[in-house]
Amino acid sequence: DQVVTQMLPAAFRQQDDVLVWIDTHAGRLAIDSAASGPRDTAISLLCNSIDHFVLERLTVNTAAAGAMTGWVADDEAPDGFTIDTTAELRATGAGAGAVQYVNRPLEPDEIRRHLQSGMQCTRLGLTWDDKVSFVLDDELVLKRVMPCEALHKDVERVAKNDAETFEADFYLMASTLRP
Image (cartoon, rainbow, N blue to C red; front, side, top):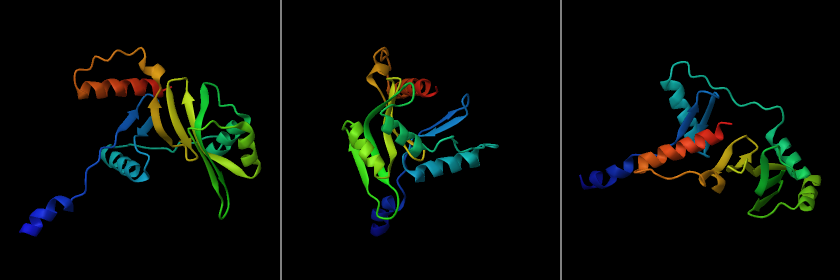
């Protein structure tokens, strides 16, 4: 009985929250998890819980790694975006190496040398419209999505409790990320 009493709380898995945003207007699903396990579980639960819940993978005309490699090679992001100080350049093939930039300016000459040696950009920090910064990876996953200071400067905080704070933050991020 003592062993059961001591071990019972540890016998059950810890429950984690995974935030999910279903943008019905734009037809998008966002899951707040960088790990594939919680994402897959959330998708499975949604598909099993909602009749006719159909998901399509995001498709693009240019592979993410190819597009990001072009941006860092030209030292120019697409309109509305700026390149931040985070990047990963990775070589292909067996025993291939990688170079990571973290909080370090991406020097164009240095980047070009890496690209000429056969590396591709597989992760890139970007900021959109001075509102949201994030890291884009070669699988089109957005990681470390963070609102910029400019997004909060005109917002007056009047939330009275945690639930109101969550709702206000959610609305702010959802209305910012939708476009």
